[in-house]
Length: 216
Image (tube, rainbow, N blue to C red; front, side, top):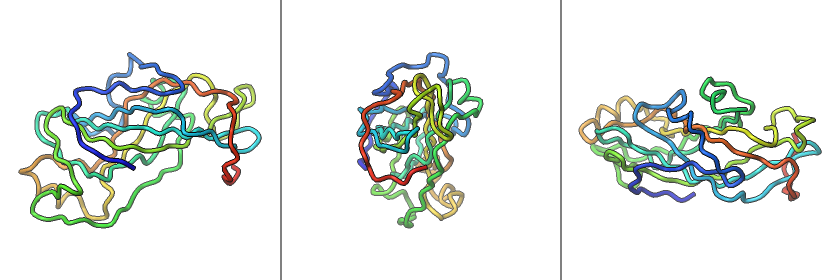
């Protein structure tokens, strides 16, 4: 997983299988930390894996960008990661917390880092207004092969909407103590943030590989 920090005023959310932006969904979804905006650039699917007679898994590399929309600096852990992918029939459904599929919650509990008198540059990024932090994740999305015969727990092929839940605090340490300790450097972000929904299309029956996955 590659990480980095770079300036970004705005990021267009793309999906390699369906590259459409939903103009109606410009506000962050529920669980968003005010002024912290998440966008994603989904790259070409890494592969499609056989997942039983009715389902396949689409593995999508996604470049994720977290932008500081506040006018004050924020402090962000460099080990922020995607803990869930949420898929719904529409962006409106996702904004209303109506999910067709929510992948299993995968919360990260990392090793403790040096919580000294100021944020370590190795473990945290301090972002000014409109600066951003980027990292890459590969996410597997279960998809039904046939829309007419949907598989339980899988996304229907065709049009759908996707959001990402990003865990920003991967440590066991109480963030409240650290937040007060580092308040002069910026606002420590420790809540789960959710990306703006994007429309996507998933093929019904692409060529799949035998990846040795346990069948559902």
